[in-house]
Length: 414
Ligand SMILES: Cc1ncc(COP(=O)(O)O)c(C=O)c1O
Image (spheres, helix red, strand yellow):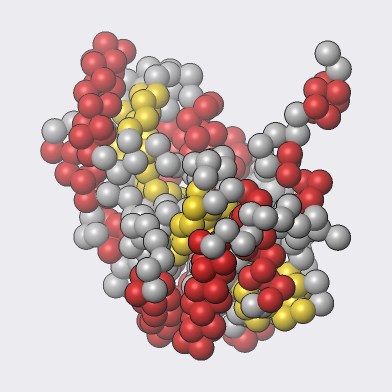
């Protein structure tokens, strides 16, 4: 069969919706400054779908640092991969500041989070080693695991009995092969908002020998007394052997880092294919990240404001009877029952009639018959924004329960 014909016949689970979704439900264009109120198709909307947790995206000091660094260095410098010609004092300064902040001896910058995670996993394990990972892990973890030539076992999300069972299986194998075990989980799961049970996983180290790799994309900057992440929040930062986060969320930028013991970070510097064979982070991103980290460290009110909005939103939704699942982080899912057509119409209604823009998540990310509206509160939302949103959600949930949405077809995007 011709590959292009095969693709035309099956566009994939999300791509199959593109004919009506594209430009509206998928690939929407939010315009204007990155603020709670942005412009969508010419109209102002209250936006709840950007991972700009601390509001740094449009912070005046950040904007100034980014602009000055771009003017001073341009976007090209340094050229090449870190190992060959792309290193600089500022890259190393940022690494050392990040290591200090997350309480690890050393740190390595990554040019993208996704490729970084895939490549860390690839570099850490060989065919004699075994990976044990949480079932709800992010796609980058799954893809890293897919590269692994040895055995891999998945445990039921946050279920320590299931983890123990898989560790036993893993141990039987490594006893034979002489390999090691890598356990992988997230700090905060970006869809449900659940924290990974890091305390439980770390406690398993008393019985089993393994190393723990935590992807804390959503926890860095938002969790823990200083914002150092979910390990700090749960008092087990020392038990995390390799700590990863991206700059794409709290830091409102691009890039990522991994932190851990010096010898392991040194090994990763010389063995991570996604870094050895790809260009290093441009200088303005490095300088911008140094400024963001400084604000994250010195302005705790950013995290305090975030949590004020989180608490108001989550308790307000719960009081009105909404099912927001088991979140223990800023990520706020709202679960409703309905079909994909209901989901599209609710989203359309929220955007067009209530001026609320949030992300919509449907099967296959959530089970069939479940609609998830995902809200990301930030430090720059106001309590009025929260009230407006909860009122709008009450109206649409009432319409949904009366079956008013399912009587019409999904809204085609014009
Ligand atoms: C849990 C998790 N890990 C990794 C990534 C990928 O990071 P990046 O956007 O820097 O590639 C994301 C999304 O950004 C994420 O949510």
